[in-house]
Image (cartoon, rainbow, N blue to C red; front, side, top):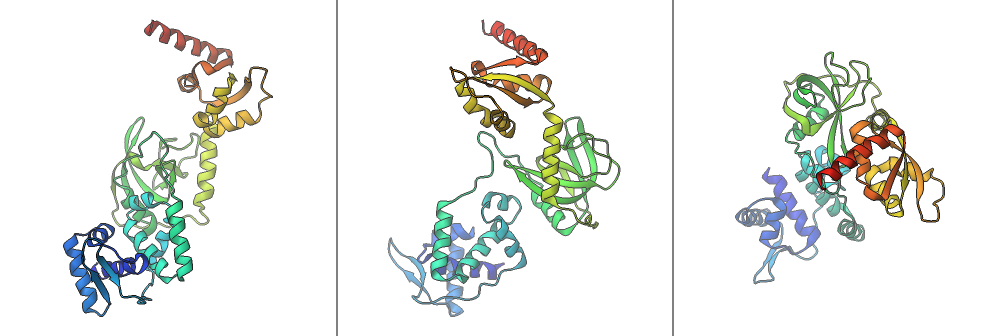
Length: 336
């Protein structure tokens, strides 16, 4: 709405001082021509906006002028919880609301606190996605987020590893983990066991975790649902993550690590690598340690352990050591 844009323009000038028309256009995501029209509208309404001419010119408020029109809308107030994560806020469709809320908050703060807030914003930044991996495309995220907020049932088409399925879901909450969005939801009807991206062995009708990037289509027909009493999203996610790790990392590998592999283990195996090193015996004279590392079974464990290259030797169990020997022999033959 134009009224919101005019207020944002006014707060930008109040918080940042002189700004050029192209700078204002970039912040407000409008054309330079629109900025000039909006500045004229502010002037016509009695706001003392001064235009400085020349290469170093721009627009600024007359010295001493400050507005107290800083009331937050409900959406803007809610968006402040994502103030440290502008990328996810944009994904959720709250980017403009977050920017407006931050401007209003800065305008309401005393000068010394506003300056501190700006310095913190200049010095600290949260980048949610993991290194060397693109975030999932999530074209349906904003629609799913709206359904979570409005308690609307979703008719979905979801891609599983065994094939796509149609499901009616009660969306209860969204979680951003390592740059990937997940939806905690209950199916509105009976579902096949372990059909989603959650741990196997859950009872039918239980809460499940769906990877948002795998939704092929989403439709909200307008039907509402009642949230389960006492549902705690953070507690559910913590327990679900613990259960998933326990279900996937069922095998323990005994591995001898070089000093280099010891440094690589936490980066490659995460919390499992940290735990393995924490319980290891002191290193030998060459700096090597023997650890017990929780790994997935079969080919997944072989692939993960091969990433450590010659800096690690799997001592057991025997079947895992043999599987690695077969894989290494095949590689040697291929590159002979």
